[in-house]
Image (cartoon, rainbow, N blue to C red; front, side, top):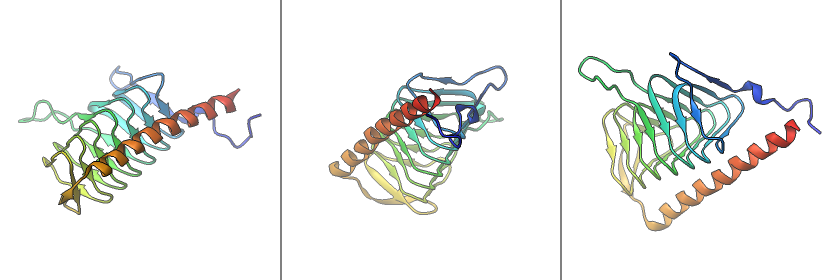
Length: 193
């Protein structure tokens, strides 16, 4: 039986912009309070957690498979401009971990990248595969974190190399979020029955 206080799936906004609807894989988990607008694609088994905003109105946003974007995060992109006709779309690969309250804007997060809680990734940046931007850090425009490096601070600078054990822990986190997302999705389905 469904308790009266359980929110329905109706509190999610999935809306077009300029006639382009988001494309969300059927196995993805989209939590209550999310706003997903415009030219956005979300891959298989990815999870978009409570109260995230993903706004593909100025350019495209692509999110791969098994990626998680945790509660309260904002993902946006940068529009084309004179001298920069492509603007900065946002491209997020497979198996990416994005912590709570992160700001992801007009950048590329390659497969297996990690962005910590409250971190900011700005226009034209790249967080390479198996690289980490630590909690609270700010990656200023145009910077690239090379593979297997952790950057910290505001503005972010290289702190140290990541070892195999740390990379394995990041991938365990990805797997845990896939399982948790599917569990939340199942709980919502059960609650609606």
